[in-house]
Length: 129
View 1 (cartoon, rainbow, N blue to C red):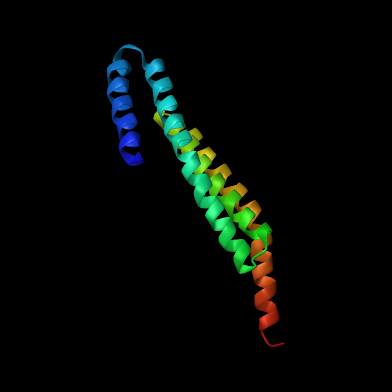
View 2 (view 1 turned 90 degrees about the vertical axis):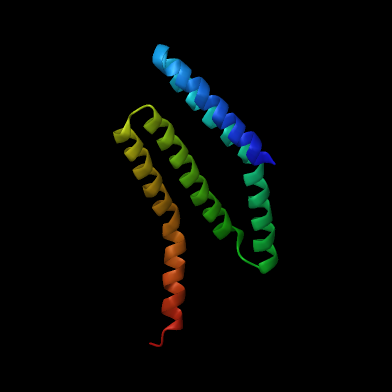
């Protein structure tokens, strides 16, 4: 029941943050960041298991690994950008959080261009001339 541990960390951190926020807002922010990182680190093992399983399925299906690795990178960028944006939002910097999200979207598009190109080429080959 890992979710109980994650929720416990979240609730405990929230109570401490609410207590600290009035007296020491900087410490409250640091605790917020630390709790987020702790939860993220707790989940990395689970994410690794999922990625390993998907990689084995892709290999057994004959899919080229370059595509699956690109998809993994895209997923990683989206999670990291969201995590970073939420931390910055917690600090009250909505503008910077929006820029982090924009950067994540642009980097995802950069990684997606080769896959999109291959899909378009495949569709063009299937269409009659």
